[in-house]
Length: 180
Image (tube, rainbow, N blue to C red; front, side):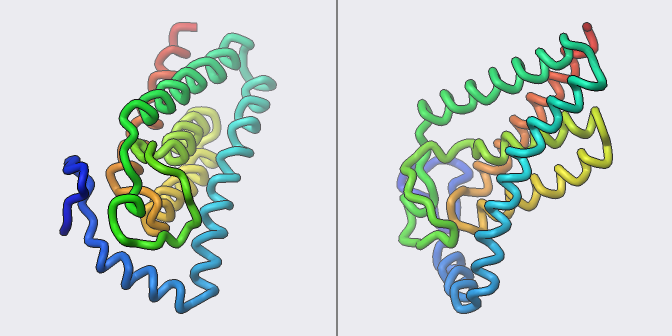
C-alpha cells in the first residue's frame, strides 16, 4: 500500500492493483459501459427520489415535516459542500498515476463524497417514510459508493465518511421531527 503525497490517514491505495483492475475492465467494453451506466443510474435515482420523497411527505404528513425535510438536508448539504471546499482533499487520480474508469476532471474536494452523502441521506429518510423504498435506496447507495471507488474518483475514506455523514444527517432530521 502506498500513501499519497498529502500523507492523510485513510488515503492508501495500491495504484498498481487499481491500474491492473482498470486495464482489465477497459479490456471488456461491456463491463466498462456497465460501470459508467451504474454511476449515472445510481446518481439519477437519488436526484429523482428526493423530490419524490418531498411529494410523498406533502401528501402524507404535515407542512412542518415537509419544511424540515427540505431545510435540514439542505443545511447539511451546504455544510458538507463548504467543508469539502475548505479541506480540499485530492482525488486518487490527482495523487497516483491512474486513469479513472469514470470520466472526471474535477480537482480536489474529494472528502467526503457528496454523491454518497446525498444518496445515503435520502435512503435513510425514505426508510422512515416507506421501508421498502428505503431498502431499495440503500442498495443504490451502497452500489454508488462502490462504483465511485472502483471508478477511481474517490478513496474508500471519502465514500465511508460521506455515508456516515448522510446517515447522521438523516437521523438528526428524524430526531428533530419527533418534536413536532
